[in-house]
Length: 427
Ligand SMILES: [Fe+2]
Image (cartoon, rainbow, N blue to C red):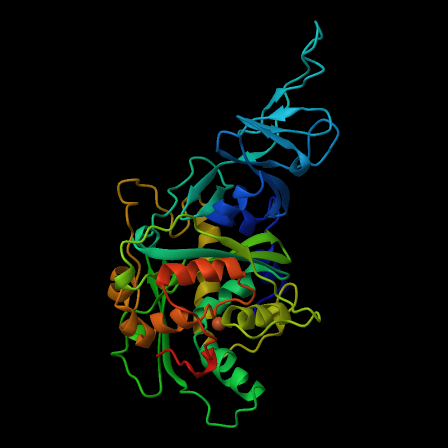
């Protein structure tokens, strides 16, 4: 149980907060590159700052304060130029570094140029079909080059949802393996009216430190320490990511009570379909409520989201009853507090990569890495416990557009059918 002060320290992420300053020291995915096939500006709010993300006419990306310094008009309604963005109100233009480079009326005739004008600006990079921002102090660390981003012959998709609650309760979910059997197996089973036995219980769990963050290990009834979920475990990427082999996810703070939930899913095409080069990594936005306004609980990710939101805008950790299954949650909080102290002492927090030579094709712990990376013939893939369910259906998040499903089916040369994810018990 935490004090109110400690809860605030861990959850407040706006400008000038200690946790906000800590989290800003990492690159965060904030959008899909393919979103900018249809548009050139996107309003975005990150760490309590209203910003505009834009793509210049020559294909570069910028992230600057959304409010024009002139009279406060919204730059997401602006127009892009070869090397910047122009406010649509009076044409003031800003470059990627946030400097105002043109004031058309003031440049006319022999008028004197005004004082230099500068907006907040943050570097943006494209990687793996996502746009990443760095909002911390310079020099920026490396943007991790995870090996999975470089696997050939794969179909990837970026899925984004806005979650109306604080980032930390979403991330605490990553170190909480007992929730799998309840939230993703037993509860949906009972909701569907199935009175059958509950799914195998978690028998043991452990969290270990790793260079990239933490490793979460567990095994369930019917298995033992030889299961890859114990011997290899799952990677918790510091400070707000998670990696499953076929899936990354990140929880990026919008502000104290809203979180950008970004997932990157990948599946190798059946070996019969090689070589395969994905023309574009699609990005789609996942709804979290259905047409009646009810929370969606049909898909694994949506089930998690509902649990996070139900904890309140900022989970009140002063009223918890922490227990044996929360040792991962406690470890996560302790390490975040250690990182706050490290930053206060002028050091890097954990998981920061500074050496570009080291940042090449970084391998993460991954169950079924060989199959996920190298693929399998379709018949074996369909029966594979990790790959099969995804080949049948995109079960992570509800609302996949038909165009993405179709592109996936064409890549895989399969016809997807609805897959009963509740009958699937990952060991
Ligand atoms: Fe979950």
